[in-house]
Length: 303
Image (cartoon, rainbow, N blue to C red; front, side):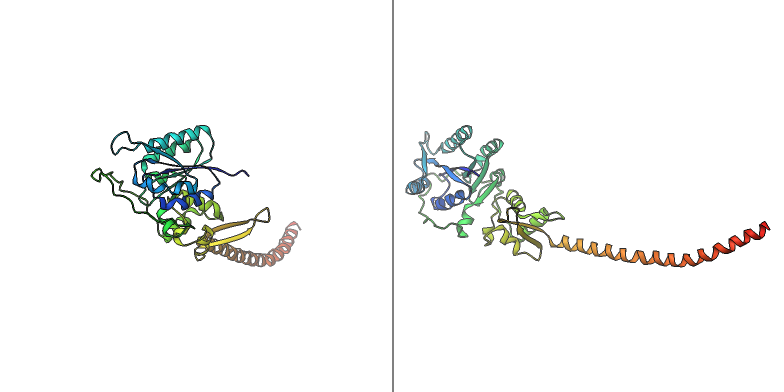
C-alpha cells in the first residue's frame, strides 16, 4: 500500500522551536513528509529561534514582512498555502501545528475535501480548534512525558515589544482527563459484545482532543487496556493472514452478567422437565385402568 503524503504547516509565531524534533517524529508515523513549512513574521523573536533548526529538519521558511506595526500576516499566508496545496491535491494528511483558534475554519474546509487533519499545539489551545481536527496532539504534554527521542534545548525568548495589546484567551481550553475518566469512556463506547480494539481506540481519540496513552505512561493503547483487566476482557488471536494479531475487548461486567443470565436459563430448563415427567407418570396408570370398565359398561347396557 502506498504511503500517505504529509504536509506539515507550522505557525512559527506561537510554536516554540523546542518541539521541532517531536513534530517530525510524530508526522513520520503517518507517512512520507512531502512538505514541511514554517510561517511567521520575519521580525518575530519566536521565529528567529527557528532559524538554526530549519536546515537541520528540512523546513522551508515562509517568512512574511509586517506591513503595519505589530501586525503579522503569517496566518493569512499559511491559510492561502494550505488551500493551494489542497487544490493541487499533492498530500493526503495535513499536520497543522498551532495553538491559534483562528485556523478552525481552515480545518473544517480541508476536512470537507476529504483530507485528514492532525492538529498539534500546546494545552492552551482552545477546544474549538482541537475538536475540529481528526486528531489533536498536545506538544507540551508529550514533550514533558519524554515522547520525543531527541529533545531540543529551549532558548530564551525575547520579551514582547508591546505587551499592552493582549489577545483575549478563550475560557475553555483542553483538559487532560484522568486515567479513570478514559477507562469510563471506553466502557461507555463498548457494547454488549466483543469490539475490535483498534476501532475503540479511534473512537476515543476522536472524542477526546489531545488523548494519547503516553500521557499516562503507557506505550500503546493495548497496554493501557490490559492494565485494566479487572474491567475489560481481552482476547488476542492471529488474524486471517496468520501474521498480525487481532485484539478484541469487552466489558467484564457485561460478560459476567451474560454468564449469570445463561446459568439462570440453564437452571430453569433443568427444572421444567421434572415437573412434566411427574405429570405423565401420574396420568398413565389412570388412563389404563379407566379404559376397561368403560368398555364393559357399554356391553352390559347393550345386553
